[in-house]
Image 1 (cartoon, rainbow, N blue to C red):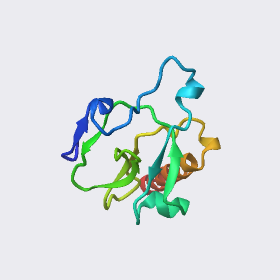
Image 2: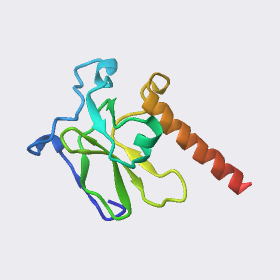
Image 3: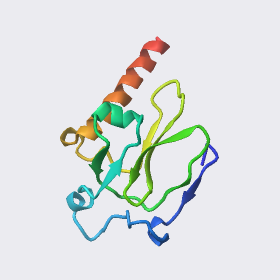
Length: 131
């Protein structure tokens, strides 16, 4: 929205989209379990980092990107077409957004480790630039 895009407030109410919301009657372990596959387009940063064109992720969200804003580029989509990750094109540093929850047990998830390693690297670079 900050880049001129828009949000779909209730994905589960849109024909063709899966229900990405958590079932709150389940345990947290079950709510954060792997739920669906995301696919990375050719040339995407995650595809380059992982050396594969898709990955399995958890899913706990009601909203989703309806229209991607200017200067943003799709990095991953769910099988139903929902944008699950995007980045700021030509950002001077790490500027990446995902719909899944990489903070859930990141040590056990290769995709999470890639994201957190890149974020940590960007933080260290920024700290060095400021000193």
